Image 1 (tube, rainbow, N blue to C red):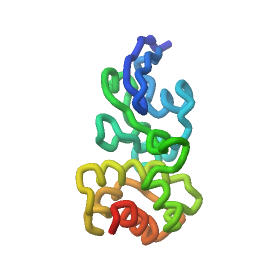
Image 2: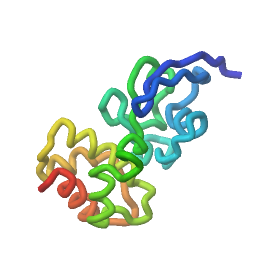
Image 3: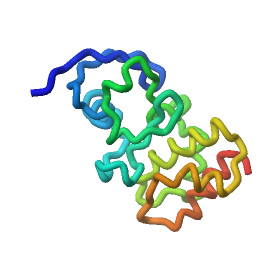
Image 4: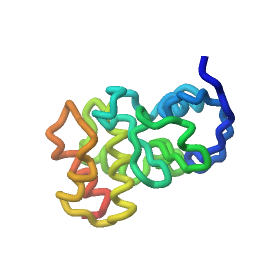
Length: 155
C-alpha cells in the first residue's frame, strides 16, 4: 500500500490541501479527489494529450505527472477558463467555429492553446500546429481546431 502525504497546491486559483499517495497521478487527483472531470483520461501513456493541464502556466500531461510533483505549484484545468459560469474565449471559439466534434480531446486542446496564447497572443498557423502537436483528435482533420484557436486570438 502506497504511503499518503498531504499536498498543498493551487488548483484553478484555489488553495487545496489534499492527501495523496506517493504514486498518485495528477489526473487521478484532479478527477477522483477534486471532482474536476473536465480533464479527460485518454491513452494513459502520454500519447493523446486529452489530459493536458497547465502547471505553472505550462502544458503538462496529467496522466504522466505525479501529483506530489505539483506540491506548491499552480495547476489549471479546463474548468478554470470559464468566466462567471460562461465559456471563456477559447471555449467559445471552439463552439462557434465547430472545433469540437465528440469533445473528448477538446479540454486538452484548449489548455495547450491557452498556454500558447498566453505567451504568443497572435500566433500564426505553424505556431498553433506546433503547440497542439501533442494533442490528438480522432474526429477532425484539425482545420476547425486551428480556426478556433485563430478566432480566439482575434485573427
